[in-house]
Image (spheres, rainbow, N blue to C red):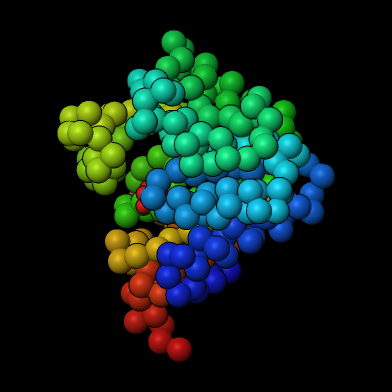
Length: 247
Ligand code: PGA
């Protein structure tokens, strides 16, 4: 696992954007795995700005988002569908059919999970998957205890995740209890992984990710089984790791 330390959130976002742009510009065809949450917002702003300035084209890019809430319509500002269109997709020249997000309104959710997994396979697998990390080590919505062998599946969100995401909703009761997420196995099949982390709230998660054991109780530790993972994290997020391993 390669660790790139940056000064702050802004530098993390810029570095991540450069990393992705380098691939988007140099590949004829690219499959990108995308994340939501507060961490990648700056990344999407940079990519949107770059498109406006340099006209970088995304018509060669197929994307798959990690997850979506169950029961929230795409038109609802708290849906991940809305987030992606608002922050990124509406600012670039993507091809509509090439931008995939799990359908949290599907009448048969298990069938939707299979369909999503199949779509990723048909696209040739994910070239580069962007990830954030939850305070409890979740990646996507794979909560502690999720099997490392899990494909795309329906999850029940933990209280800590619902509380962390309550800031986007009027009340905690409105935070969905379930979501569809790519599984850990799906994520690990990506040819390359880019995990972003910023700020104090991620310190403990990075200590576990970088120095801790591999365990299903800490989903992100599965990334240690992956041979091409890069972490871009800022100084504050890496503070705990550096105290354990001062240079
Ligand atoms: P955040 O969420 O980017 O909003 O901190 C990360 C995550 O929960 O995966």
